[in-house]
Image 1 (tube, rainbow, N blue to C red):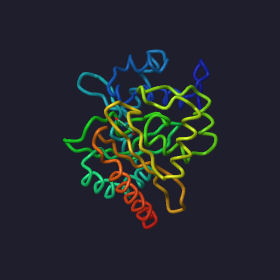
Image 2: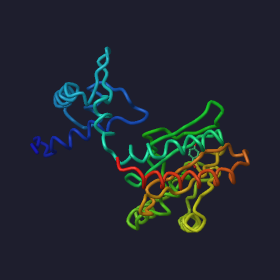
Image 3: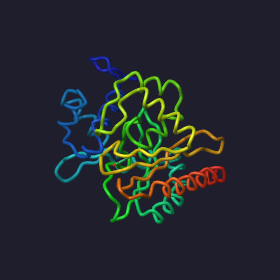
Image 4: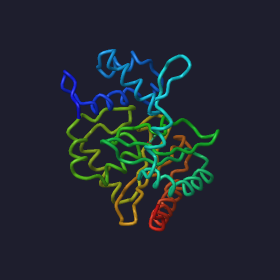
Length: 252
Ligand code: PHB
């Protein structure tokens, strides 16, 4: 790949540009993109123009840039995330209809929980999770499930860093986290009160593929005082088994 005078490849620069977008920063000017990607302004403008031309980025009437629909289309095409989300949706809808609380699906991605789907109703309580958003593995119920079944190298990296508190009740002690992960594996679920925010309890279970490997976490976020934890575990466990059955039937 062609390298710039600073030695980074076209692909490096392209990825740096795309990574300036986040769940909180969805619209930017080309100049802001260039600054955040660490690129000279002329280079940033040229690459942004090419990407707009290709539909990967879109420019609105105020000349601000956002990620393009074409990128969404290509990213979803044949992706494992889409296959999993489609298999999971009917079961998530049932959990959501019965409990009437936020129901979400997350996968392990670069040592964080990445949320593929979230269903909510107008009466559901607080929840900071967003589709295509991430939460730390040690702090969220989904993350604890994903970490409990993760490969040793992921676990090693998580324990090599300080465990940052998201709330006053986030697990920040390595020994407590190890015990919690062993507990998750023994029980097949986790109940995490106040780990992300004081007012909510996350409840999560593993989702297995047709070969028995844990590929996702299915969770609900309950108001702390709902008393619905046992019902949530039951619904989530049944839904998770349903998703595994659906995955073994689907070949798309
Ligand atoms: C959780 O998964 O534990 C969780 C996620 C989002 C919240 C609260 C709890 O807002």
